Image (cartoon, rainbow, N blue to C red; front, side, top):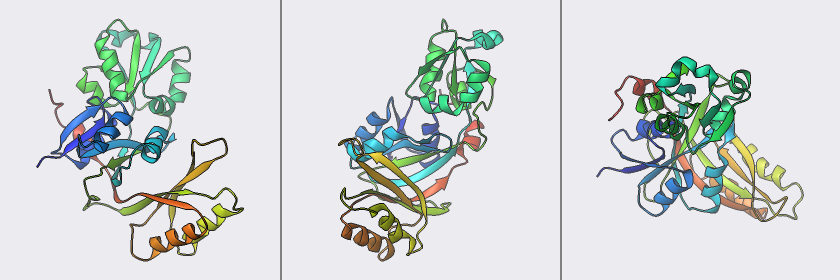
Length: 295
């Protein structure tokens, strides 16, 4: 049976590229926001939700993390990392005067990734934040009267018939985004090309235990478990109350990670596993550039 795959849309978004790379034959459904995509997976409308988790330049996508932790019980069943190339796109009728644009549209992360370019070339431009880079492209395509440009990828340019006037305008070359694959019905995926596996957990520290974080980290260290990420996020119960999101470079096993969990819980900490899953680096962006855009 064909799987229903949800992604942050509309067509031409980086999230669709991530979805396409993992589920090339899946029935893809676009959602206008990350919460809407996750809610559809939680309610069984789709089989898997594909949502952005972290960008190499701008860090974590806090909305994804917060909804994973506070709103939904959606295990992470896989991760795919996609290279990010941001371009400046304009309506074809404004291509000759693109340097006179007064407005720039894009997702907040994309705007931040291109901060230096914007400040150097369009310091007076009004910034308009959109739900995704592809929705910014669609906005420009649908409104010829806008004296604006979108920051998005080449697939969005093709999909909405926009003109690329500046390529690769992001501030740093090594720009990648991690996308999480979420599902409460599917098992963790198996990637033949997977280079590593990861387990993501949320740890809540006891409020009256001095040095608790040090002891938590020691539980990983003496077992020689590599942490690829540790990040604090507010518990939303008051100022100063935080939990920690930790990525461990290891799949769930029968000895080491259960030992960590038991030791951490013995300290009075709360532990929740968000998922244990394979990780894939996708080259789909280059492959999809060669393919015709679906009509």
